[in-house]
Image 1 (cartoon, rainbow, N blue to C red):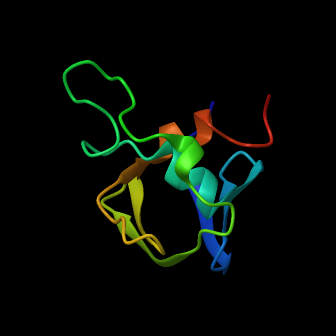
Image 2 (cartoon, rainbow, N blue to C red):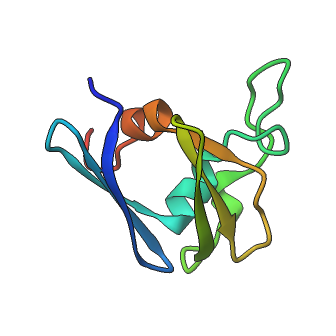
Image 3 (tube, one colour):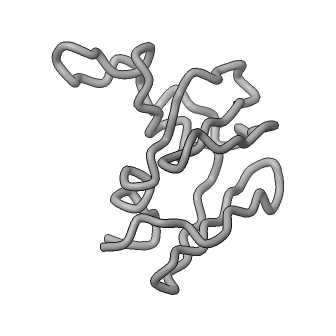
Length: 100
């Protein structure tokens, strides 16, 4: 499975679209990305257990800033003020909302 994005588009404040180099396309809502946040405030670093309750994320959550982190991921600022997560491309691809 390829994990290299060709393009990353913030289509509106509530969605991010990633076109992958193998031709696949993933559409993530800001709420879904916030639910997946892998940062130390959301996931216990020692146990890997999720601390942040994904059910607490409002469906209408938006994001105001998307930035590349090196060649391996993106970071986002969410409307709830959260901005410490780095989302590796491999994790995003593994959690593609269109793949079940």
